[in-house]
Amino acid sequence: MAMIEVIRKDHGKWLVTKLETEHTHMVALPDKVRPRADRSMISPNSALNSSEPNGFNNLKNFNRGIRINPFGEGGEAQGLLEYLKRMQAENPAFFYAIQVDNNNGVTNVFWADAKSRMSYQYFGDALTFDTTYKKTKYMMPFATFRGINHHLQFVTFGCALLMDETKGSYVWLFETWLAAMGGRHPVSIFTDRDKAMEGAISRIFPKTRHCFCKWHILSRCKHKLCDSYIKYPMLRTELKECINASETIEEFETRWEYILDKYNLWDNAWLQSLYEIRHRWASVYQKDLLFPELSSSQRPESLNKFFKRNFNTKTSLLLFISKFDQAMSSQYEKEAQEDLATIYVKPPLKTPSPIERQAADIYTNAVFEKFQEEFVESLGYYVEKIEHGSVSKYNVMKEDDNRKSYIVSFSDYDKMTSCNCCKFERCGILCRHILRVFFVVGVRVLPEAYVLKRWTRNALKNIVLEERVTEPGLSFQEYLVAWYNDLCLDAIKFGMEGAVSSETYKVAKLALQKSFNEVIAAKNTQKKGQQNLQRFARLQKMQYKVPLPKLQPKKAFAPRVTQHNEEDGSGRNAKDNALREQEF
Image (cartoon, rainbow, N blue to C red):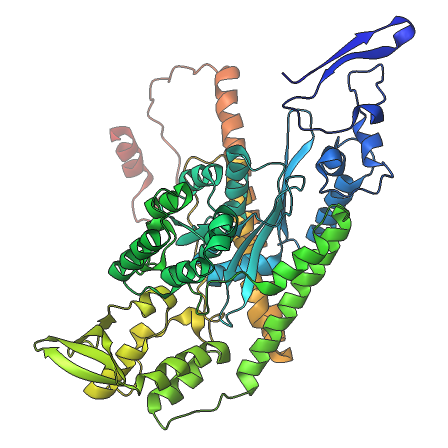
């Protein structure tokens, strides 16, 4: 039903004769449009230079804020492009990409600075992709790729501004982000529940496990079950406990059925849809999946507050980007402060155990606090051996609560162990039940297999500069881009290791100069080889173009006699030599 009818009148004037707004997403109000006698009803540049106070998030002038003719003059989108170019000029490892439509209008934008790309190489095992930073349907999606570092801080792996939330936009974004991260796929990715996003992830990350964030599930429950929450005040608490506190599948199923029975919600379509995909968001179904978040599953509060303050319809695009830059700088500063604290501040020990002392020396302070909590709590459990053999099994229960027990398996041969709570598989640190069994069986040192490097003080060190595999079938130009990105990532690692002290800086500088000379020499050798091949190719062409000289027939051989001295240097006289020559 959406349509507009425009008739051309005399003297090049145009008249809007009919306008049907049903099923229409408004771009500009009819009384604001001044038709012109050209192919475009609204000039992109005039829209960009508009002095209206509305910011880039307002859908009414969304196209004015982000869509431009790249050959035109300034505006917010032009300012964004200049910002991205300036950032890359300052640091070649800064990555950005812009997608344009058939009319050369900007549709989607992605960027990631050098620190973000480097952080992903160390902490990119689990990824959170979030597009929910918008308050109303009139605000464009701002997307972030995030993870957790070895200080339990959220780190950013890249950002994007999207025109829409369609599968096509997500496919472009994921492909671009993957190229910026060196082609390395994450082990798991946590997102909001969205069909377009789900289709794009299954296409671009076929081997990555896609899960739905519990924070988003609980947040949507507030809206989907608002009437039930008002009618049953305890429903929200019990549902949250069912999702977060259940330790086994059986416990989750029992609690879920109890809630549906108690509040008569068996016919609730929202809860039915959640139950059908429970393996995608409920923690009890994801015990074999590493998601390095040792605290409760909550959104980063600092970032959430930042968006509430700065992401609104009155904020201009460039102002928002500037403030977001400041937030990222503050994030990097906090990470640097934690690095220093881990080096110079030793956490206090609560027991004389060598395992606790070892953990304090290995882990960062933030992770050690989580480990120390597990270790101290382990002292309140007792162990009962229930199965003997090469792999023994133990029943671990709390001293004052016999209702819950945990089964720990332990191998005397290689010290390998496991617990049915699966805390190590999920978080990367040992649980209190295994630590208690270690005490009983006499293990006084943490086995190397149970110290995850991503949680240690040396998480950012001793990384081998491996050659990253690129997908086959790329064009030569695409290979050049992949090689360039790969070398940039290695250069960042080199810089982080070299910029520690004046001594390491000098060593790194000399090593770079030596390597640079070797690269130049290799290029020159390759260039000479190419020149030789070109010369050979030219000679082959000349062979067919220039006629060869005709060969003269050979004359019959005639014996020749040469006058010599009576006796030459070999002791033979001239006559003997003539006879020998004739015989020949």
